[in-house]
Image (tube, rainbow, N blue to C red; front, side, top):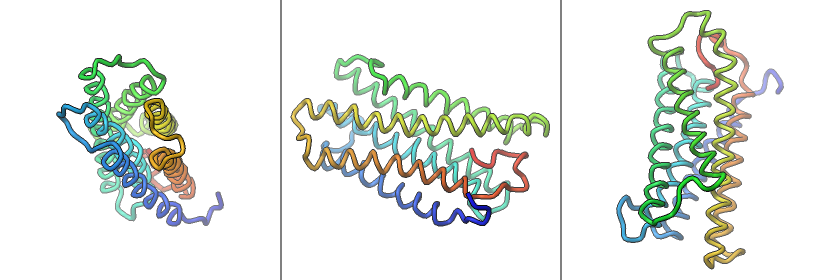
Length: 231
């Protein structure tokens, strides 16, 4: 990236794509799949909570958390707190989202953890939790020494980016898996629902791309080694 390149155009597109993705997944689950419910005779309504929370939580809010520390025009302590809280919200929503998938399977007498998507999903949520706990203890409270923080930073950043890429990829795989099941159950392969799901997956990928473009377009900060400037 050119040194003088600004992050604003990339972050604007990322925010826009995040809003579009959230709207699309809600339209899919509410208008096409019947709605959302924690308890319902139609167990599919329970499952519908899963894609909504995983996309809005881990992918969109998680992406906003990544961009927040790099892009917000605030003082360091304020950015740290926002960064931490957004990741916590993403993690909580992700945990609830995964729980609803298990709840749906158990109440529908369907086996758990039989697909690549489910294996990756468990891996993502565990790694995301480890990343958040480590970041909290080392970079927030009680906080590690300057040496520990500076030595941990490159690995913390690399690990965080890896987990986020894995989250976006797992979400995309989930769209494919669910749409395949629906098409096998009679949903038209070239119908409006199929196109909506596929375009939601594309928006998800593009959101992740613009999150990365946003952080890569930002020059290093003065406090780069006192806290993770990316994730």
